[in-house]
Structures are given as structure tokens and as C-alpha cells.
Length: 234
Ligand SMILES: Nc1ncnc2c1ncn2[C@@H]1O[C@H](COP(=O)(O)OP(=O)(O)OP(=O)(O)O)[C@@H](O)[C@H]1O
Image (cartoon, rainbow, N blue to C red; front, top):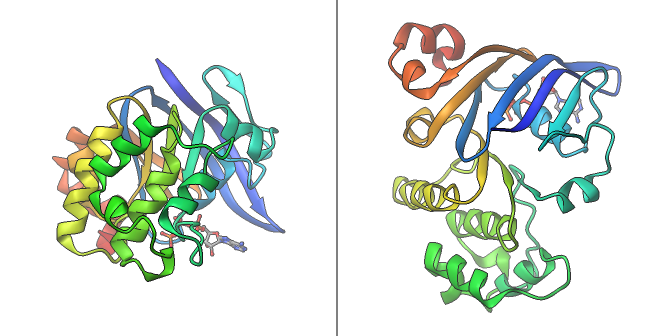
């Protein structure tokens, strides 16, 4: 079943046309990977889904419902979470306070907190520490944890491995596999080795257009295609 469907999205930022033609379907379950060179329009695509930019023309359907013109808070309430590239955490608040603020009613379900602590033990160890004092990897974990503090159907994650040490990247991959057991992840990545182990389906954006859609297995097996579409960016 298709969970998210983007159709011929064009997004302008001010007078500048960033997305010219972005369309792809994300099936429910597992990890869908969106690849592309720097500046191709990946972040703009995620922000357009979240209602932070407004595509026109073009449409975004989630679970069969047209969400193109909905407000971001209403889109979030439908069960879509966004982990932005800058992580969106509050540095002067503690780890636990950051999690509470990500809930709708200011109350954390203990079972979900337990699951988060099992996924990211550092967040339990440092629960009373201010977020600014965490390492880069721990901040990223907190950012992902905020996205799953309540049940979500779709989680948009923007370049989560940027600047992280290989051991942390492995832990993140493990966590994403677990999260994708009962949610769908739309992952934007530059780290192809990370993305290829996680993704089932994928698309490539170039200069604001989707230039390829298919299975990750086929794409990973085609070095010439990778080179043509992603060049040295990978
Ligand atoms: N707020 C903005 N104002 C003007 N131009 C913008 C803005 N945000 C993005 N752009 C431009 O839109 C294009 C696409 O940016 P976007 O961040 O979506 O790309 P990306 O594929 O996510 O790249 P990266 O991997 O570098 O994050 C780029 O040329 C960028 O400079």
C-alpha cells in the first residue's frame, strides 16, 4: 500500500524555483531512501511534505488524503514526524525535557520511553544533562527519539549520519531498522553505504527533478547509474 504520494511537485522559495518536478510513491513500511547531490532539492522536498514550504502546482497525499495545503501542526498530528538536518533540539533543556516537549500533551508514555532507552542507551544515561553538552551522535539520537516519542506512521529524516563517527552510524542503522518495524521512514542521505543497507525502495533527485525511481537492490548493483546520477557526491 502507498502511504505517501508526491505528484509533480513544484516548490518556489521566494522567487527561486527549487523543485521543478518531484513525484514518487512511498510504500507503507520499511525505509525509503531519497538520494541526490548537494543542493538537488532533498531538504526542500521534505519541507514541502511537512507544509513548511507550499508546492504549487503539485500535490502531497498521505494515506489517501490530500495534505498539500494543510498546516504543519495538522500534518504532524496525522502521524508524520520530521527530523531536520539541524536536529531541532533545545540546547538549554535536558534530554528528558526535550522529549516531553515533543509530546502532544506533555506526558511521556513509559513504554515508549523504555523502548527509546533500549534503542539509545545514552539518552537514559544522560537524561538530566542539557542537550548542548551531548556529543554530535547523542544529539542526533535525541532528535530521532523526539520523532518517535509518540506513535508515528511516517518519519522524515534528513541526513542523520552527517559528521558522525562510523560506530555511531552503525548504531543509528540498527535503530532505524527497529523503528521501521512499525513505522515508515523516508530517509534523505548522502552516505550511500549507510542508505543502501537500509533502503528497500529509492528515488534520486537532481536539480529539483526526480530522475530515477526503483529498488535499492537494483540501484546498488548498477555502478554506472550511481556514477551518472550521483557522481562524486557519494
Ligand atoms: N531558504 C532558501 N532560500 C533560497 N534558496 C534556498 C533556500 N533553501 C534552499 N535553497 C536552495 O534550493 C536548492 C535546493 O536546496 P535543498 O536544501 O533542498 O537541497 P538538498 O538536496 O537538501 O542539498 P544538501 O544536501 O546540500 O542539503 C539549493 O540550490 C539551495 O541553495
